[in-house]
Amino acid sequence: MKIRELHVQKFRNHTQTDIVFGGGINAILGENGEGKTNLLEAISYLCLTKSFFGSADGIVLQVGETRFEVSGELETDSGLRYHVAVGYNHADGDKRFFINKSPLERFSEVVGLFPVVVLSPESGAITTGGPVDRRRFLDFVISQASKVYLEDLLEYRRVLRQRNRVLFDGKVNRLDCSDLLEPWDEELIDRGARITRRRGVFLKELDPIIHDSYSRIAGRAEKPTIHYQPSVAHEEGISEEDLRGRFRQDLKRKSSEEKRLGLTLVGPHRDELELAINNLGLRSHASQGQHKTFLIALKMAEFLYLQNKRNERPILLLDDIFTELDSQRSERLLALTRSVGQAFITATSDRVFSADFDWAETNKRFFVCKGTVGHAKAASITN
Ligand SMILES: Nc1ncnc2c1ncn2[C@@H]1O[C@H](COP(=O)(O)OP(=O)(O)OP(=O)(O)O)[C@@H](O)[C@H]1O
Ligand SMILES: [Mg+2]
Image (cartoon, rainbow, N blue to C red):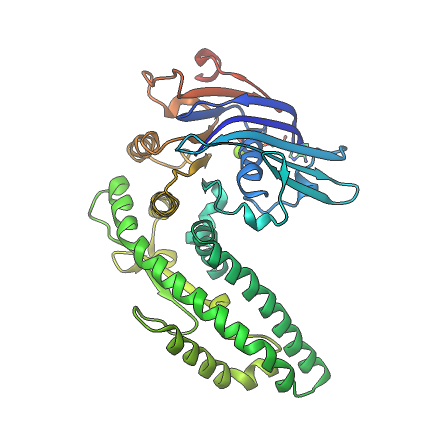
C-alpha cells in the first residue's frame, strides 16, 4: 500500500497542505511544534478514519474553523488506486468517509482496507503502560487482519456495557438482577470465547516473528517473550465449546462478587500480556533501551504479520523514534525500514540519514514550517 498524494484542509495547524509522496522513505523534517506529527495524524484519518492518538474530531479541527477535510490517493501493491476522503463538520458533528466518491455506511468497513503500522512516542504505553494498553495493541492489529474479529469485538463491547449497566443498577437498587443478566450472558460468552481464541492464535503466530525482529535490531543475546494471560484459561487446541464451558463456570463462580461490585469480572476485557526479556519481566526489569527495542520489534512483527494476512504491505508511520536510539540501533532500524515499502518518518533533522542517502524519486524529504510543507534542501536542515 502506498499513499501517492495527501491533501489536508483546516486540520490542526495545516490550513491547506498538498503533498505528492515518494514510494519509499518520506522524511518529514522541521523544528519542534511546526506540524510534522499533525501530518502523520492526517494520514491516520485517511487510513483509519480517525486519529491514532485517539484525539476527538473537534480537537484536530483547526482552531476557529468549522470543517476539516483530509483526502488522498492510495495505491495497493497490485496497482489498484483509491481516492479516499474524510470530512468533518463541527456544527452538527457530522463526519463522512468516502472511497472513490461513495460514502461509507459504517467506519468499521475501512478497518484493514488500508493497513497501517504506527510507531510514535505514545506507542511506548504498550510496554510501559497497563493491561488496557496491551489489549488495545492486540485489538488494533487483529482487527486490521480480521473483519470477523472486529465484529466480535464491537459486539462484545456492546454486550459488556449492557451487562455492566444491569449489574450496576442491581447494586445501586439492591435488587437481585440474575434474571436480567441471563439474556446477556450467552452472547458475552460466545463472543468472548471467540476473541480469547483468536488472541491466542495471533500471539502464537506472532512469537517467531517477534524473535526474528528483535534479534535483527539487538542481536541474539536477548530473548524476548510474550506470554498470554487470558481471563478465561486458554491453551492451544482447546475447542470453542470447552472454552465457552470454562467461561460459563468462571461467571458462575464470580457471580456474587460481580453483583457486589456492579461489574463484569470475567472475559477478554480483563486479559493481560506478560512481556519479558530473558524471562525477566519488562516492566520490572528492562532498561529504557530494551523497552524501546521490544517495542520496535513488536511493531516490525505487526508489520510482517499484517503483510502476510492481507497480502499487502502496510504503510509505516514512524513519529520521532530515532531520538532515544543509539546510532547502531538507529542504523539497523533505518535499514529495516528501507526494505519494507513506503514509510513516513518525522525528525527534527536529517542527521539520522547517512550523508550519501539516496534522496531520489522514491525517497523524499519535506520540510514543515508553521503548518506549510516544502521540499527540504539539505543545507537548511542539517545544522
Ligand atoms: N486544532 C489545532 N488548530 C491549530 N493548531 C493546532 C491544533 N492542534 C495543534 N496545533 C498546533 O500544531 C502544532 C504542533 O504540531 P505537531 O505536533 O505536528 O508538531 P511537530 O512538528 O510534530 O513537533 P515536535 O517535533 O515537537 O514533535 C502546535 O504549534 C500546535 O499549537
Ligand atoms: Mg511531533
